[in-house]
Image (cartoon, rainbow, N blue to C red; front, side, top):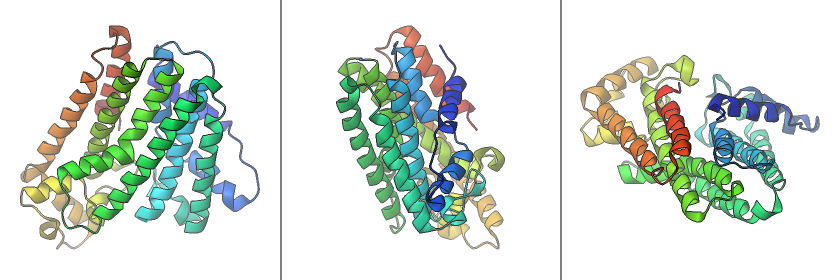
Length: 315
């Protein structure tokens, strides 16, 4: 079985071969710039991995995988605008380097390109692929709106937060895997098992990302350490810290952003929020693995190895 790094390389190669017109330059230059920033490419790699794991032939898996990556990058460009994020992967975001209007239009082009890529898949798969893609795209928008709504709320429950990250992040992982299952012509039960695996491992991955934002290595994570705390963003860490009696009001009266982050690191650890969040990450990781129980052992090991890579080795 091909390693995940080889699938990622295949996607990178396909992205390099994706040609955008020269003009209007302010529409297409931002896209060339954004793809040059790189990325994990894990979602489309999952589509390819699933398809190969179950013996799919032909190019439908590649076209479906590219649709996933194009849509994902569309969502990132728009999310950066809404989050007013100055950096992505250590470089200026598109709206910072150009402006909001240009970033919106450039992101819209990627959304269209995602449909163009799906349209290249074999006709017999197209209805199922489109139905799942449209459902997923809607859910991602719902998750983003929930995330924005949380910014104006004093409190958010853990269940609400999990539902938000399921929609905003995890359903696209589930979609990516099910795309591979659809072009492999797996039955509906296997498709559901693999989709659920993707959702749960996606939740675990986002919880890991919350931890990395505050406790990770900024050089490896590619973004400002403690950005969520500085912006007052609701995360699993901040939600549990509040429940345990450590509020943002208690950590905010400090002289600098660096001091704020350092204090949050200390207080979230002392009150037990960090340990709790780590435990919840493991909980969803195990739920993901449980979804693989019906798979033959050889295929199951491929997804188990990917899960370990995603949660314990990435970053």
